[in-house]
Image 1 (cartoon, helix red, strand yellow):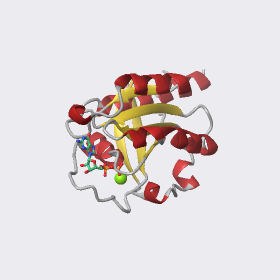
Image 2 (cartoon, rainbow, N blue to C red):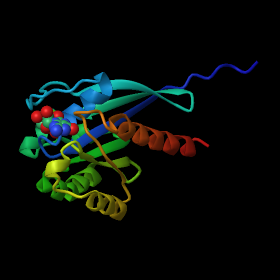
Image 3 (cartoon, rainbow, N blue to C red):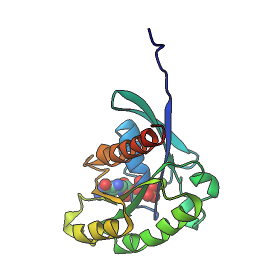
Length: 180
Ligand code: GDP
Ligand code: MG
């Protein structure tokens, strides 16, 4: 009988983007199915771990939150260290947050190599009435830069799990390819 194989998968995923786009709420929706109506930065909470299953394998997603560091444009290199996935988030009701995406991608590229799985996330898609960034704009930016793209709402749970799970599956595929 072959010995049973125990493999541990622990993937560090960072969530980046301008202040108040909903990064912390995407994380709390994903990890705890909670939404926080206060916009106070969750100081001190560095990351949360959520277990997901891919191809029958248990994967620990360790998702990091900037915890407000981005307000001072001071996300540290320690934040990015060892990341294998990234959610780059903007708010579909605030164009300036979309215009910042290039800068966030540049920052990601200075700290991480190109194998990091990247998902462009247009959050707050419940705010259709005051939409400021079209779906097409999001899509075409993602295509230009080779990113996955999804619109989410942390408020009503739309696509939040999907956003994380697509990234996790891509990381898993990258890892399996390497070990073939
Ligand atoms: P962060 O600074 O990027 O971590 O953003 P937060 O998660 O703290 O959210 C900033 C504000 O946006 C808070 O007032 C949240 O309640 C609100 N917010 C977050 N996600 C959504 C969403 O999907 N829809 C709506 N309408 N508001 C959201
Ligand atoms: Mg936050």
